[in-house]
Image (cartoon, rainbow, N blue to C red; front, side, top):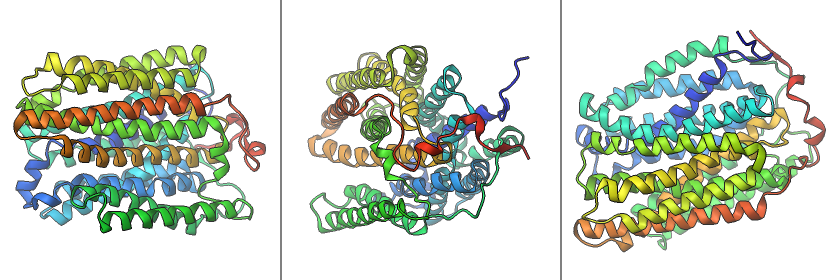
Length: 485
């Protein structure tokens, strides 16, 4: 039997992959179940989208705080707390007796996910040595992240048809219990550093409020026009809060307080490139999932189970893309893979834009575009994870991971809000009109992936040491003080 590296057990990676799968799955698993949820709990038509938006709002708003808490209080503690919150919220959602209870449960799920996601990526970076081991772990991390979204749609259809909408919430509970049982023996505990951690409370409040208000302003564009006072006022408030956050963090770097985000990380070109790419790619990818599901059900007339099964080729393509990335990243580098993957994903979305039509078929309108887009997207996850934490000190990996996840979540929210407006503006009457609107949305998604590839080509440079205050702390992974409790 191969001996495990020091500080890492055979259960570590399965636990981390479970985190990524759950976080991504619960972004999409409710989509197909929404009509049944609405009928079961008496949602008003205009409020049903809050089942999705409540999760996105809490998740996106709390990611930076979750990443910094993982750094300061310990990554294993963050996992335990996140799993516990996520599991309890899933149970509460499955037992909800009113629309308000379900929306509240989804918001608490998002808070749990915000604690889980940054800790998981940070643990992959810290406990897998640079080289093939870390590349394989990040490949699996990326694949399970994407697969969670696709499988969520599949599982949502199957569970809704066979066991009712409550099962899409309750299915998380046994998974969470199994993961909690594996955390203690599988995840090494972080030894607290000297002194008492000083959390950047003001920064946490500003970034959480700013991101939450931004996501709120975007998701409300379905009911408030982009040029309305409500939308413009909300987005302006978000801009003020996030600008104040940047000012506070800039001054915090000069003092004794530990900032929530050390802005010097963004001066490190691979980190900046990864976050810009993630924001743009997610803006297109999230919306593509949404519109593919709508096209299958609203235009082609698929039922929930059949629509979910139609995402199987996407799952296969993501796996193929991550395999390609894992085998080639050492030879061609992160920038080349991000550019190639982004352009291939854009080609798939452009193909969707040309292929979706009222008289379309799965083979002619969905299969080919799904495979091309998914392979391209799968190629991006390994270089994204590598770039986002390249050269980052071990005690700041949670910070960097929270930033990447926040970019991903915010990008997805922005993209979905914008593309829903695009589709609505371009849509006409009947199935042909709907297909026309969806085609316009796919065309914009393709443009976003082209922009992501271009940004990576321009921004991503050779790895450099982080700015002052981090380079001298970037000790080798093996030197991190870890103990097993």
